[in-house]
Image (cartoon, rainbow, N blue to C red):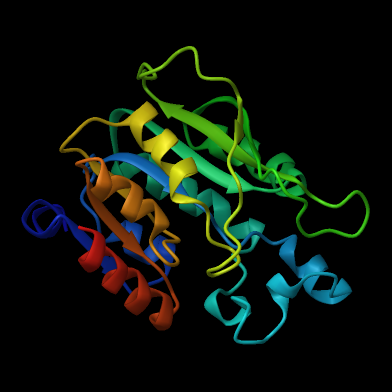
Length: 229
């Protein structure tokens, strides 16, 4: 996998996140940024207050299966193994999932620094106090200095409105890539979706490897990276 990333600059597989991580060599990744389809999304599916979780051409509901909280311990264990000695991990989630998985990351060996807040600028999904922000859990393996120590913990970037509705803006992901990796290093995403993290990595001279369980997402992400790489 690392040779693929070195030669071709990017690679996206159609595999389960944990199984894909198990296929990677230990200490082969410099930075992990990922956005699991967290368990509390099921509540939004049942309430039906958002187009994000409806089955239609305008939504991404068919793009993901829920990744249940019970699987996070094995996910964190494998991410810890594949990350190099001094590296960062960013996990995007909502407030409910944050409370559930933060101690799981610590149990795997990560130091938890804080939740970075992504301010989406525009109101999003929800039922009571509709969401305008999302949490990005900031973990560290070993010790790695951020590139810009003056960056605030609230990142205001307009959400994506004209693509897969679960997609994160490339501008937001570029901030994390630049903060926590260097040119030529390997950035990974084990829930790669339409490969926005990959675009952020490639645009800034990094290599990218990723995986997604949805074949359509893998095809779209791969084509996107071929175009942007």
